[in-house]
Amino acid sequence: MKYQSQAVAKPYFIFALILFAGQILFGLILGLQYVVGDFLFPEIPFNVARMVHTNLLIVWLLFGFMGATYWLVPEEAQTELHSPLLAKVLFWVFAVAGTLTILGYLSVDYATLADLTYNNLLPTMGREFLEQPTITKIGIAVVAVGFLYNVGITALKGRKTVVNIVLMTGLFGLVVLWLFAFYNPSNLTLDKYFWWFVVHLWVEGVWELIMGAILAYILIKLTGVDREVIEKWLYVIIAMALISGIIGTGHHFFWIGPPEYWLWLGSVFSALEPLPFFMMVLFAFNMVKRRRRNHPNKAALLWALGTSVMAFLGAGVWGFLHTLAPVNYYTHGSQITAAHGHMAFYGAYVMIVLTIISYAMPIMRGRPYGNSATAQAMEIWGFWLMTLSMVCITLFLTGAGVLQVWLQRMPDAGEALSFMATQDRIALFYWMRLVAGAFFMGGLVVYLGSFLIKGEAPEPALEGAAARA
Image (cartoon, rainbow, N blue to C red; front, side, top):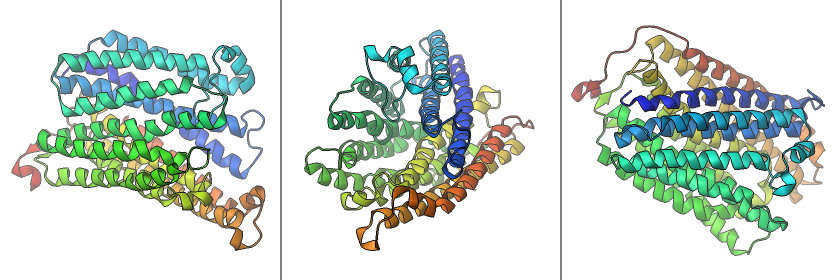
């Protein structure tokens, strides 16, 4: 660890992993409720479990991004963090606010929670993914601004690198776009139009910049390839991501009331969205091929390569499967959407956070070249268990979605079935998805367990020709 202030990333990473485990637990509860409808009812109704599942996902990824930034920015800027104390205070504010919000979801009904948090003064609740009470949204905004100030000052006073510039651009966009969470017009079309400014432009816009910057940093550290080469790739990738991602927001505008030209804009630019993810695959594998350093942290390198591949499959391929307006007319809101969402979030964002944790946590624990061979072998087992389980979850949900569209929405397929009758027909896919989810949880347990394994630390990385031998 080059700079002492980088250590503030540790509690962010630890809390992120705790919330990740909670998210998967509630995912299993939801999977059971799909096939056993009264499971944990009325203690945890389906709508509450889903709200907790998705909110935990968003919050733990934000903790992961913040931890990654606190680790990465000082090293890139070659200076200590502006205020480690502020970083610690913001951690506790965010952790307490997030925990109390989740407990609120589980303790009282949603309407009561809205009353208790004075939502009537500034109504923002009740929208998917933005269910947080207004007071929590304000807390997130305060934490985000304080965080941006802390790392921004650090980046400005130190060395300027492309990695830091791209990362800070993504973080600035994240904070600005969050402000749309407070805009809740009474017109439903207008509400949905700007709702996507948070939900889409986060995950298919500025978050991609954050992911690209973290991946570039990891590849610089693990491969030893010249920074200039990696930075040129990064510029091209993020340019394509922004162009396709911003205008590609239109694929969410197909059926909510905006003008017809969004059918064309949304379809054409969404069809381009797989390109930056494919370029990311070429980028990652090309850098590894050209590496001048054979870093002993094999697990971190595997996570980095896995991120590029799974992000391309989940966000790129599965996104393209149903993004064109004539196809989306039938698939919109089906289980195909869920299949895309699961693999895209896992591939693009879950895996990049686990990548930086895999690289940085051993260093913060006094192992600059990674965990022991035994611990890394266990971590790699966790990688494959989680990744293959997510592939299975995606395939099972895709099968459910295709059958759902065929039975319920295709007028030429005979008499269309009702929604519930269709759900009965595709229940087998839900059972298989539940089994795959259990294996995913097993993979997460193995991954977390790898941090408890001790052993002899690896030797320093080989450089030059020895690395390619």
